[in-house]
Image (cartoon, rainbow, N blue to C red):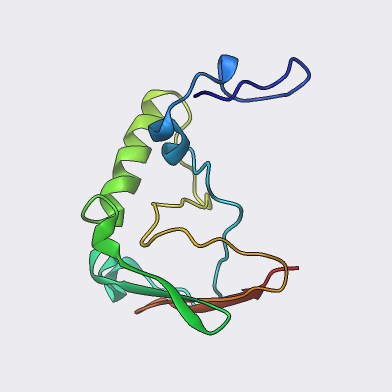
Length: 129
């Protein structure tokens, strides 16, 4: 089944003719993302080797690894950079690029306390308002 927006809706996809793969590629299930303050260079860690743990209200709700993203998150970013350039919209210095999920999605509701920890990168946390 495909959802079709009303004529008054605005959508980036013509006639909303998409499949699940299009939704995944467009971060369609992503409501938001957090950035930590701790910065490291690629010389300081191995993106494919990182381990991620996400807790919701103090209970582990999702785990994963960098290699879950096409074997290496850098592979996804390289693919994006090449394709974006071919389409005339190259990545630019300062762009924030989400390489892909390291673990399964977790639903949240108002009041949920979320903590994500990624080895070598650190931890971010939020309470859903």
